[in-house]
Length: 130
Image (cartoon, rainbow, N blue to C red):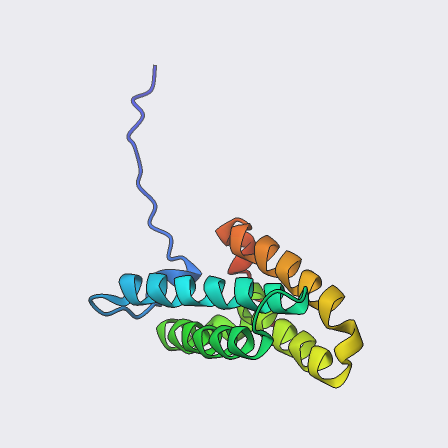
């Protein structure tokens, strides 16, 4: 019987060069909490029970801050499914502004896209598009 020697292969992943700093995870968690609060407030406002403007601003500011952090940490973020998804959601937000009558269904579309992208396996979220 042959002696088998275990071989360890080290393969670099696309995300091995991600930049980081102490506290980045907690900053991102705080921004995500603010973002989700803004989304809830925006959705409530669209349904007539909250402040649309406050929800929109909180969602926009926290979302752009998270996006900037992700783009800084991984400059290739825009070429990945997750980064491109942010651009698509921004386009849908522009559609909400241009056609207010479609705001509620577009809001739900953004919510579905966001959920699918944020809970998809990393191999899908971080797949390079171009």
